[in-house]
Length: 203
Image 1 (cartoon, rainbow, N blue to C red):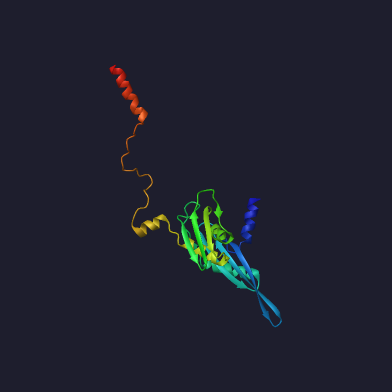
Image 2: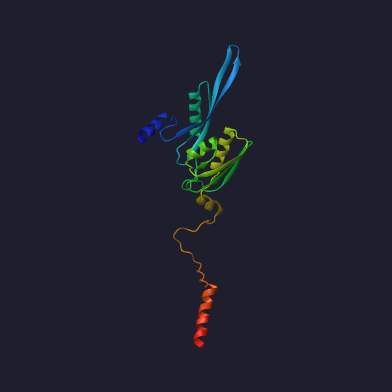
């Protein structure tokens, strides 16, 4: 059953074999003309492979499927690589776009994606499974997607930060610490017991 479900999901995906898409928002626009109203549709689409690549696109057409396809093609042209640490992001990041500000924080295993629909689509298709988010200001889906996408593009892995700053931010694994261990300090009761034993021996 699971294999059939996966095959069906792959057939439904229009972004390609490796990429998946999520339609975040579809808006209808009506233009009044001499013969009545002419409708067009706008689709906000997020594409990604759930392994560190994600992009977004905005398509416009007279039919919903064509608008979605245009959004997918635009999103595939602007894919970015998102550095991941296991199932979360390497560090906290904050990004503002227009009247929207998005805060993204790494989270421990089992937290899940704590985000709204627009930010969740970007994070989910980027491969982030444990993260905390907060949106300040406007919650317009387009602004939230743009701000979240820009925030992910600002992430840097620790190796990249070490190269830029020319410092070591962590101790290599397997390297023993050169600092000598401090001697264990006995408790006050343990110090008193030998003194009492010495006094009893003298008596």
